[in-house]
Amino acid sequence: MAECTNCGDYTKFEGGLCYKCYKESGDINKGQANVKDTLEAKKEGGNDWVHNVIKGRIAETIMS
Image (cartoon, rainbow, N blue to C red; front, side, top):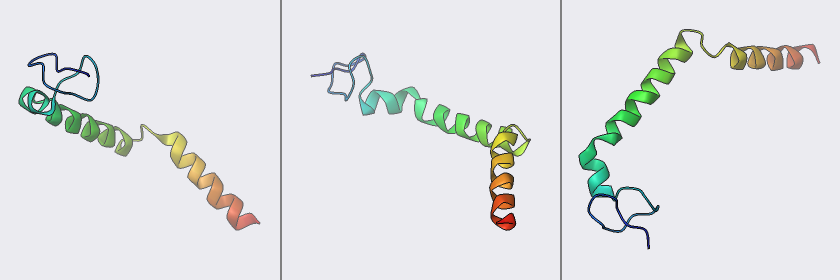
């Protein structure tokens, strides 16, 4: 059985933290910040490839 690296409680993965230790470490909020950073980058044009694919598919649909 996998154990928490901090307290030795049950955890899903070997070498990970249990929910209680994970919550106390504040990693939950760090993950949300990364999602916000990614969304901001997309708004600034960081993901032009996806927009071009969508535009191309729309054009193909209209032309056929």
